[in-house]
Length: 328
Image 1 (tube, rainbow, N blue to C red):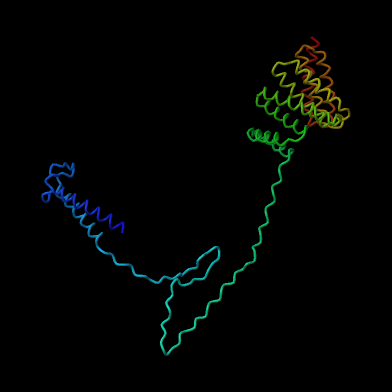
Image 2: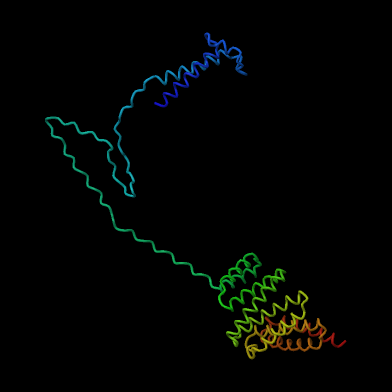
């Protein structure tokens, strides 16, 4: 109904506008001076076209339309309702034509489909991933560092810091952060990380005063403190840190004689302190430290020349240079 009304209104508007624009009859006189722009040369044609279009709309709107015939429809495919598939059925069925001589055929109802109501077996859930341990994170960080994948190493370090539990793991995480920052030339960040690591390592030592691993952790962290202090020109702080680190490694007693890594750490501590003593003009004290380091390096090289031979060669060279300086 709405479409008919719109068609009648549009038809009247177009017919009347076309009649006026074309100048037909007495109504067209007032529009004779109306400028149609580019369509002015075609005024009669434009007006006639609008009038014809309006008349067509009026005729179409006023012409009655036949009602559509109702047709039978059938569902020829399965329908899915609520997850169940139903057999095809007729949407509208006509009753069969029955004659007096023939009885109406008996239609046997179709058997209802049997639905399997057995619950489906639930899938076995995948096992939850085992969280990575602190030690595994550290191994991965070391691998990234050796491969010079610094961004991955830094992300792993942050994960280690968040996962660290207890004083020992906290000390290790902050010491590694200090090593990483020092390797990147960020001395202020390295110094802050080392100081935090020393604090945790001291707490760990109070809990286990005779644990060699804790002693080495504190000694190594103090060596990092000394390296940063020496690089920044704080020689007194560096000297104090190196001396405490050396004292801790000496205090391990017989462990140095059994563990090559501990012996090498002791040799490194002796030479770091010796170099700093030489820089401060204490050549005789530096010479004594280098001779002690040479003895340790010689024992290591005799046991494993391939591994510790280069260390012995460097120590021998530095000792010879220092002896030459003292002799002059």
